[in-house]
Image (cartoon, rainbow, N blue to C red; front, side):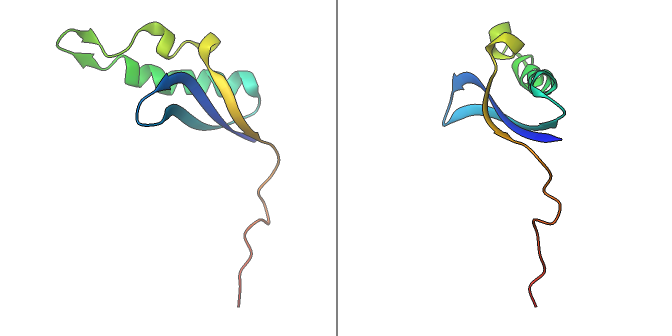
Amino acid sequence: MNFYVIANGWVGADYCRVYVAAENDDRARELASDVFKKEATKRTPIGPMYPEKYYSIAGLEIVHRLSGSTEGAIQEVD
């Protein structure tokens, strides 16, 4: 399992990003797209909040990729 930070190229107070855990890059982009799509399709009085390119898989960029297990990373201190 890998951990990803995925950005969609949009900027608000900071760049818009999603954190996901996935088996590979493609699956990470799919999961991130689903999260961005939920935000983008929230209704306002004039329609959806953002256009389709807000959550388009083709427009998503993997900003950080952390591979490997975190098992054993936390140790108890006496």
